[in-house]
Structure formats: C-alpha cells, structure tokens
Length: 247
Image 1 (tube, one colour):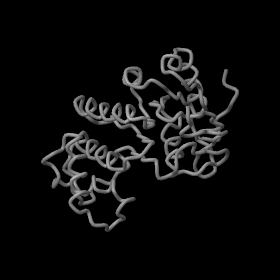
Image 2 (spheres, one colour):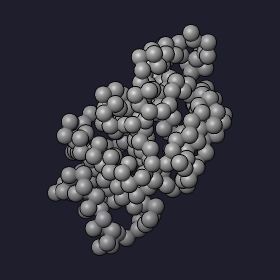
Image 3 (cartoon, helix red, strand yellow):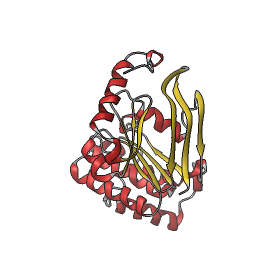
C-alpha cells in the first residue's frame, strides 16, 4: 500500500522546546485514523506539523504519494475568528481559493459546486447568513462544505466533533466515511474513545511520544492508555521537562 505521510524521527514544538518528539510512523494512503491521547499529548501539534503550518525541530515529515496541495486542514473552531463579517456562501467558497485565487470570478459552474457542497452538509437556505450567527454545529457543517470543495487526498481534522449536536456529528461522520470510501486519507484528532472505536479503524495513540499506532482494537488497550496517561503526567509543565525514563 502506498504511503501518504511518513514520520521520520519527527520532533515538533514551539520556541525550540519539543511538544512531540521522535515520532516514527508511515500513514497509508486511503487510511482512516484517529489521533488519540490525554490532554497535553501533542495531538494538535502533530496535526499542525502534518498540515505544514509548523516546521519540524528535528527529523522529517515526508510526503509519500502526496503533494502539499493535496492536503486540507481543519483547525479547531476556537482558532477561527467568527467575528469576521462573511456569509456562509463566502466561507464555503474559500475552498476554491487554490483554483481561483483570492479575488477570482466564481461563475455559474463554480457557484453550482458551492451550492452542492452546502446542500451536502444540510445548510441549504443559509447561504446568506453571517458566520457569526451560526451555532457550533452549523459552523462545523459550513467548514466541512469548504473542505468538500478543496477536493484533496488528505484531510486533517482537529477536534471536528467538539461543541456540535448529535445529528450534526452523525452527518459529518457520514462525510468522513464517504471520503474514506473514495480512497482518500483522513486523520482526525479526537477525545471521545467511543467515537474512535465505532468509526475509525486505525488509531495513533500519542503522549508526546508515540505509544502505539495501528488497528484501533490493538492500540486502545488498557495497558497502552495507562502508559499514555503516565507519560503525560510525567511531562506536565514545560515541554523540555518531559523525560524518557517513565516506568
């Protein structure tokens, strides 16, 4: 199977202080993987490294079958400025920016694609609504519609189901399964173990270091999760205080 991403002794962090380190893993093309671990495990940091928004301190993150333009990244909702006065349609249309640029002309065909993406996530009729007026679930639907327009091979999702209702979560999981069925690669930072077990066949368990990676039922064992908690408890405080000698 082709490799989408390869982590090679990858260390990421901030101000030269490592938040995750020495990660080794090959992510197969077409896989559906949850990134799981305790608070402070470095999950979002790893996703930023994969997205190319954070450069490695050491090691390498190599693109296998992919190019950088084949990757789409969805940050946490809390990282998005919802006070910016744009409509749902304008937000979703940003998914076409690589195709048309910042001030490109939409035209009938592109506008039709935007409308189909909005319909696919259940927001038809809300095109003119300002994003600041949306509920958490509606905002996440709009962000997924933007991803649909990007039409990439690797989707990186950071806490995609936080602060949304059960119906929205079910609909967005359906979108993710559709991507997986099309042979696209999806990696999502998640905090709910039941969701991981139910919908993600592979899991990368992280605790600033790689605890385990592979089939979810083999990774999310009590032993591995105890190890992850132990590692993160030992790493509390500044990133550089994290030691490798935890029993």
